[in-house]
Image (cartoon, rainbow, N blue to C red; front, side, top):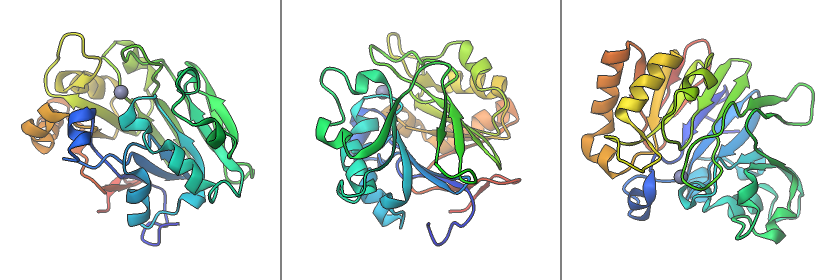
Length: 270
Ligand SMILES: [Zn+2]
């Protein structure tokens, strides 16, 4: 357990989105670490996930699950090494990998010999409800309320039902009205606000989409992350400030390493 963070938290090990920001490492791309209900989960291990975890004093051997929202490289690059680290080099078969079917099919992003390291592999599907952890007192449930629209890959977001509150991670998707219904009831909403303005044929959320989602879902707090170049240029903090003004909902722009403590009060701790 991270010594500074005894209570539930969500930590942004990376906040980069798109191949341009990722390949230049303008922002880090290590995905998100969740510690909820006493359970450690890594979500979307992009390039640098292992390095950023270790640098943040988070031990991959503590992980009970690794979740892949979809197979694109900025979400999956480090999935093999994170599984290897979680299982102590494959010597301690454990944990669950959650991923879409097409992450395992032709041209799998998880090597077959690495697939053997994990305790179980569960396939994400629209409407699916999943549990992480074996002991009764250490259980974390999440669901996949809807399938995203994201090019030709299977992509999903999820809602984590922690005892301290529900966290929604929308993931990569083009906007559609169904997202608003799907993420009802979350206290913290994480939005991959990749682009500043809508671009035809690009299945990503822009600032206008983020406003519609945050207004419609009405969480206690919203976090923007996964920034592409246009968002970096527009300055995510400024965009978050404008969204807060328009929606009346506290919206923050994530920065690399940012931690939000999950509790009665959602609080940024670093
Ligand atoms: Zn993607």
